[in-house]
Structure formats: structure tokens, C-alpha cells
Image 1 (tube, rainbow, N blue to C red):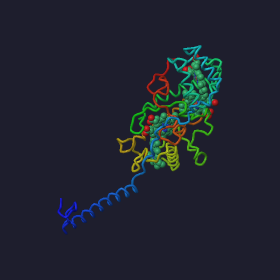
Image 2: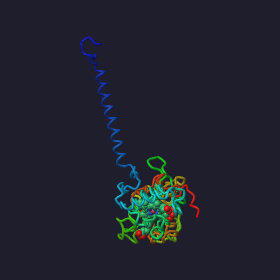
Image 3: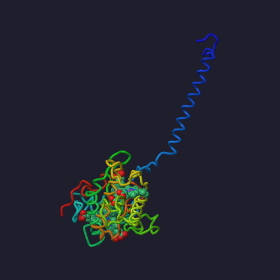
Image 4: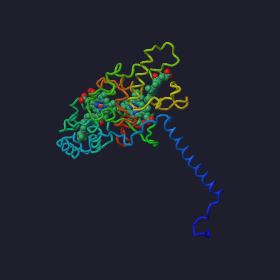
Amino acid sequence: MSQNGSAFPPLSEDNKFNLVAGIVAAVTMVASVIAFWWIWWLVQPAAAAPIPSSPVYANYDPAHKNLKPESLAAMQAYTEANEQPQNVQVLKGWSTAQISAYMVAQVSGGLKVDCSYCHNVANFADDSNPKKATARAMLLMSGDLNRKFINKLPYILEGQKIGFEITCATCHNGQPQLTAGTYPRAIQNSLPNDFRLPLDRNYPGGVVITGDKTKSLDEAEINQNVMYHMNVSLGQGCTFCHNARYFPATGVEQGGRDQKHYAILMLQMSKYMKENYGSIMANKDPSCWMCHQGAVIPPGAAKPGQIPDVLNRSSRPPTP
Ligand code: HEC
Ligand code: HEC
Ligand code: HEC
Ligand code: HEC
């Protein structure tokens, strides 16, 4: 305690100097830190767009307005009368109640149609509606794609490993027929060939241009169209998949990004879909937009547990 009643002793000239110098130093330091962050903020590379935290198909209707009350009544009656299904070829090992729940949530829900779109609701085992045959082929296709391709993806969301998978809504997004086509609406018809993926080629290598003098200017243009297609479809820039200083690098082991590996896998999957399932898909050409719709995780992808075990990425194909 000092003698003059103040809590602090009077400052000597030296101490005043030190105090002022200290304050000036502190202010300069804070200002330079702020300036540093401001400049960093100006020059930093564009961050990848945040991955949506709820990527599962946002448009499922929890009220199921797509379902007619008489179909739901028929479902209940059928489930009570037949504890076990009478005519399933894919969804084996499930009770009728489990199948019905899946039909409501993923099949009718993903296409936003009533049960009667595929079924004779007087007898759900009846196969007379050709849409049911198409749907059965679609079940098999979903399982096949999950096992062959999606199985090799990282499934990463916000740093956590989550296994997203293909389900009906992944391609259908709430409509039975893809009336707007499978290409980015924003650029449809506005640029050459709707940005169609050249799926008659093999990947990797189909649109590579570096180091090959025989590749013409047309090839460079095809490459640009495909790259732009991917940018728009995933809502990302080139650096999502590339090291912008060296585009030919694939994967971190070559100084590039792993996303390019996944994009090659997806090109292979799109080609495989066209070649093996073109006829059931009304010959609509697969595209990245078809599932991704402008997002890294397709909004219609399923989380683990939302699709039957026989269709998920670790399943075995159903025995005929
Ligand atoms: C897009 C077509 C489609 C729609 C819509 C659809 N289903 Fe199905 N459903 C199928 C297919 C395909 C099977 C056969 C699956 C198999 O072979 O494993 C099936 C099988 C079933 C079965 C098993 C029948 C049996 O005993 O073999 C039931 C029950 C069923 N569906 C109920 C429903 C209900 C209830 C709805 C409406 C909420 C519905 N489905 C909507 C395509 C559809
Ligand atoms: C049939 C639907 C479908 C099509 C078509 C499709 N994708 Fe995907 N894609 C998915 C699903 C499902 C995932 C799984 C997300 C996850 O868990 O990583 C995915 C994941 C990815 C990923 C990994 C994202 C990450 O880092 O986790 C990339 C990259 C990607 N797709 C690129 C493409 C490109 C490029 C095309 C077009 C050549 C394409 N996809 C076509 C369904 C599709
Ligand atoms: C890989 C993409 C993809 C997946 C996954 C997919 N579909 Fe399809 N589906 C299509 C395309 C493309 C068409 C052709 C649509 C058109 O005619 O425009 C189609 C057509 C159909 C049709 C015939 C529609 C009509 O009115 O002609 C039915 C029924 C159908 N799908 C059911 C399903 C069911 C059920 C699932 C889930 C088990 C499913 N699809 C999963 C791509 C897909
Ligand atoms: C979703 C991932 C993805 C995005 C986004 C992307 N690319 Fe690519 N890029 C690839 C893949 C995969 C290949 C290799 C294709 C092949 O093997 O035929 C490639 C190849 C290339 C090549 C040829 C490299 C070589 O070896 O000759 C160039 C150049 C290129 N991309 C530029 C771009 C530019 C510019 C953008 C932005 C407008 C872009 N890419 C966006 C995945 C992507």
C-alpha cells in the first residue's frame, strides 16, 4: 500500500516511458496480427464448399402424401394375412412387415409414387405390372453398384467415416421418370452436346491430354467439357480433385488429390451403368449430375442401415 491514499505509487519518468512503450508495442503487435489475418483472408485459396450436414434425400415426405389411404389399408391387410412374403427374388430374409416399411420409406418415398404404380394392391405378390419388373431390376442394379463401386469410396462426412450408398432416391430424387434428363439443368443445351460424358472411352485415360502430341484441339475441348460437367455436378472447383500446378497427378502419392481417384472410379461406374443397365434406364445416359445434383454427397444417398442388407455395399448378391 502507498502512503498517499492511492492504490498505486506515483510513476517515475522511467516507468511512464516503459508503460507507454509497452502499450505501443502491444497495439502494434495486435495490429500486425490483424493485418496478417486480413491479408491471409484475401489471398488464401478458395476453401471447398462445406459438405451438407444432412445429406440424406431431403425431399422424402414424412406425411407420405404420395400414398393413397386405400393402398395403406391394403398393405396392412396383406401384412396381417402373410407374415412371410410370397414372391420375393431380391429382398430375401425379410418379413412382409419389413418389406412394407422399406417400400414406404425408400421405394415409394424415393420415387414419390403410390404402391399401385407397381403393384396390384389386391395382391402384392402379383407380378403382372411391368413396372414391378423394372423396379426389381433396379433393386439388383443398386446392390450391384454399391458392391462394385461405392464400396471403394471413402464415405467421409465432416471428418467422420459414414457409408453413403445408392438407393432409389439417389438417381430418382422423387420422380419415377427423369423428365428433365440426367444433365445439369443450368447448362443443358447451352454448351456442346449437353456436356455428355464420353462413356464410350475407357478410364483412367479417356480424357487425358498431357504428353500425347496426337491429341487434337478437339480433345482439349472434350476434356474441358467433362471437367466443367464435374465442377457443376459436384458444386466444386478444379482443386477439389486437382493440384492446380500439375493436373496430370492422380492421388496424394503423385502430389495430387485422392478425389481424382474417386472421380475415375465414378467415371468407370457411369460407363458400367450405361453398358449394363442402359435398357432398364430408358437409355438415359448416366452423368455425375444425375446423383450429385450439385453436391459432394448426393442428396438422395442413403446412410448405413437405411437400405436392406442384401443391397448394401458389403452384401453378397442374392442367390437366384
Ligand atoms: C417402384 C415399384 C414399387 C413400388 C412403388 C412399391 N413396390 Fe412393393 N415391391 C416392388 C418389387 C419389385 C417387389 C419384389 C421384390 C423382390 O422380388 O425381392 C415388391 C414387393 C413387395 C411386397 C412383398 C410381396 C410378396 O409377398 O412377395 C410387399 C408386401 C410390398 N412390395 C408392398 C409395397 C407397398 C405397401 C408399397 C407402397 C407403400 C409398395 N410395395 C410400393 C416394387 C414396388
Ligand atoms: C449412381 C449415382 C452416382 C453417380 C452417377 C455418380 N456418383 Fe459420385 N457418389 C455417389 C455416392 C452414393 C457417393 C458416396 C459418397 C461417399 O460416401 O463418399 C459418391 C461419392 C463421390 C465422390 C467422393 C466424395 C468424397 O470425397 O467423399 C466423388 C469425388 C464423386 N462421387 C465424383 C463423381 C463424379 C465425378 C461422377 C461422374 C463421373 C459421379 N460421382 C457420379 C453416387 C454417384
Ligand atoms: C443408378 C440410377 C438409378 C437407381 C439407383 C435407380 N433407378 Fe430406377 N430408373 C433410373 C432411370 C434413369 C430410369 C429411366 C427413367 C425415365 O424413363 O426417364 C429409371 C426407371 C425406373 C422405373 C420405371 C419408371 C417408369 O415409369 O417407366 C422404375 C419403376 C424404377 N426406376 C424404380 C426404381 C427403384 C424401385 C429403385 C431403387 C431400388 C431405383 N429405380 C433405383 C435410374 C435409377
Ligand atoms: C470431380 C473431380 C474433378 C474435377 C472437379 C475436375 N477434374 Fe480434371 N480430371 C479429373 C479426372 C478423374 C481426370 C482424369 C480423366 C481420365 O483419366 O481420362 C482429370 C483430368 C484433367 C486434365 C487432363 C490431365 C492429363 O493428365 O492430361 C486436365 C487438364 C484437367 N482435368 C483440368 C481440370 C480443370 C481445369 C478443372 C476445373 C474446371 C477440373 N479438371 C476439374 C477429375 C476432376
